[in-house]
Amino acid sequence: MARLDEVSLEDYNEARMVWNANLPTVKTHQLAAAFAVIDQVMASNRRDSDRLRGSVVVDAAPGLGKTTIATRYARDFHRRIMRRNPARTTSGHQRLPVAFVPLSAGMTLKGLNQKILAFYGHPAADRASSARLGALAVDCVASCETQLIVIDDLHFIDFRHRNGQEVSNHLKGLANEMPVTFIYVGVRLKEKKFFDEGVLGPDAAYAQTSRRATRCEVAPFDIGTTPGAKAWTDLLRAMEGHIKLAEAQPGILTQHAKLLHRRTQGHIASLTNLIDRACYLAITTGAETLTADLLTASTVDNAAHSATRN
Image 1 (tube, rainbow, N blue to C red):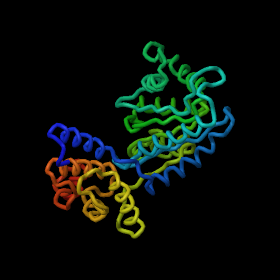
Image 2 (tube, rainbow, N blue to C red; image 1 turned 120 degrees about the horizontal axis):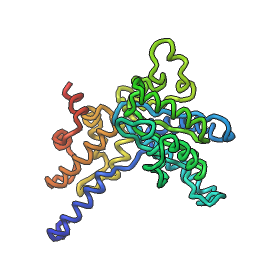
Image 3 (tube, rainbow, N blue to C red; image 1 turned 30 degrees about the vertical axis):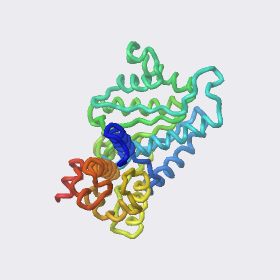
Image 4 (cartoon, one colour; image 1 turned 90 degrees about the vertical axis):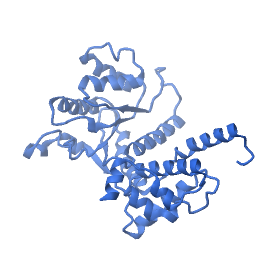
């Protein structure tokens, strides 16, 4: 680095910042446990097309890697299907084993269908009538032989509101018509009455979603037990091998395991934010390593900061 001119050093540091800010996905205990649940539910994917498949609901607090779990599973599933099958279906359509549908605030029944059609690039997504959109979505799934659909940010739907109940009913209808397994991802969906379909009281026991869906919880890291502390240390060890700092040594993160947990409460999103910000400070200050003082000086998200203060 000392031999680089000013411009070259600036470019090198920029490249390192990009690298450090994109930590690898680590197969944590939470990810492995979630994959095991999804694998069991996906066994129903082998049913004949006229039989209902189950669904998975990845449900947890923010910042615990829910979307990462769903997308990494979907990626692996996509690769397995494409390894065994040609890129085109027998009817000549592009094979798309997985569809990813992110929702937005105020989602309606029509908006959900438009999101699905947008994934497939269907030209009628913004022009067809509400009644027609659902049929087109079913046709796209069948034509492209999609087997898995990930619905992300499901917490944007208020299942106690009329629009939310319509979306919930429509999702059940799609599950009946589409030969696919759904993975739903959202924040605190149990508390939002997703499984009860917005119904309160004794009638909630009759909610079909509760029988069809399998809830997959994702918990933060807990270092209060020996296995928990080991899992946290293993995660840090996997991440520290990715860090590009001139004075980085083995243990650059693991030696600060308790400090990192205290500042992030074991939430992986808060941890990745803290690490890439600390790496930024290590580069810009010339420290080129991660010290306790530098990790303490690095900012974290508001939730982690508030929990640390309390």
